[in-house]
Amino acid sequence: MKTIKFSHRYKKMPRDFEKSRLLEVLPVRLEDLSIQFLTYDTIFTDSDGEDNYYNLPSKGDYMILLLRAGSGQRDIWTTIRSQWGKSGNKLEYYRGAIGEIFECKIL
Picture 1 (cartoon, rainbow, N blue to C red):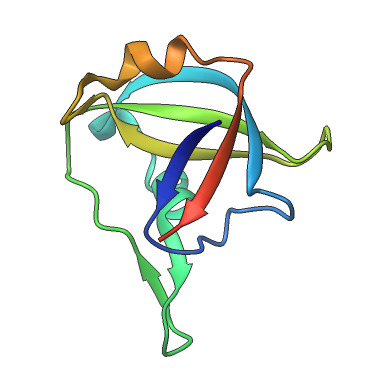
Picture 2: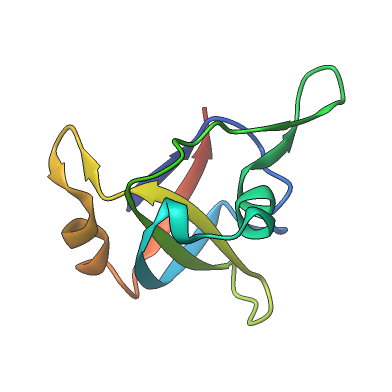
């Protein structure tokens, strides 16, 4: 099973997010996304119980992964990822995995 790693437990994560099916991969430019969507996608509660945000760059080629948690039809959630990684083109990697279930791990 393929894995998506997260640095925090984000507020967007629904119940049973640990096994989520990848429904779609949407290429985006960060500078085109609304502050409301960026806030939704990056907010988490830190160890002091305070709201904090994952720091994304102000621009660049990214993608939105659209996921469905567990076996439910309503638990749709997203994560913003760079299109590029150490191993190359992540956009192609994720597009080739649409329909697969991913193990979502918090490091």
